Amino acid sequence: MIYIISDIHGNIDALKKFFKSIYLKPEDKIYALGDYVGYYYHPNECLNLLRKYKVNCIKGNHDINLIKSFKNNKLLNFFSDKYGKSYDETKKKITIKNLTFLTKMKKNLKIIFPGYKVLLSHGAPWKNDCYIYPDADKKTLNKFLDYDYEIFFVGHTHRKYIHKYKKKIIYNPGSIGQPRDRYKGINWIQFEPKSKKISFHNKKYDSSKVKKEIKLKDKEKYHKLVKYL
Image (tube, rainbow, N blue to C red; front, side, top):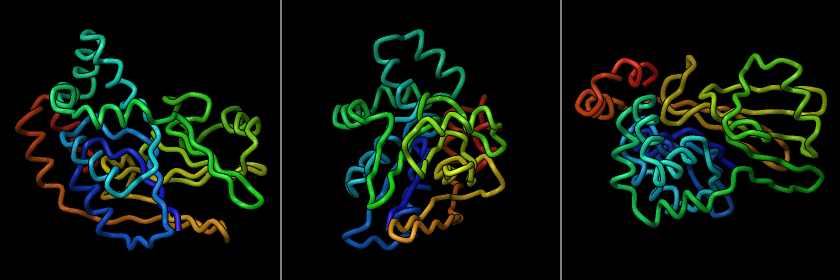
């Protein structure tokens, strides 16, 4: 079994709930589609947990933003103003081990199975911060035809969906840390490679702790940051 998760955004309570909700066998693998930082306040704990479970991780746009901000204080201020105080806190507290972990992640990751190939990206395969929405138009979907892969897993929108377009199938697992659709709680995909069977999963969790942290640390953006918790 393969588990696909995305967009954790420093929400450790949500990530812990995910690991409590699955039963991992030795042969199982987990893939994470990026955005471990931004919005909420425990990216170190999230990255520690992902490393503990040997999760295969790729970079998201927020992870790239954070890495860039270490060399540019103006960028840090911009990201903090736009997304909240978590950027300042993450820059101060992230460990060297976790920063190195983020920096070494690839933007895309391919998996080869007998008879077909899978490509994992945060946004679009051609651009990390490009949104592929549930109502993506043909012009956008046609770009997937340029890639020699049958199945694509993408994140970034925080919305779960399936796009079946010609001979391509695009899946989005939704978000672990901040869903932006009607599926509140944590969201993930389970994928059985031999049968290609996909199942979407959703679990509720106690988000009261992260809501209290937002009120304490980021009152200005409170309503925006709790909207989907």
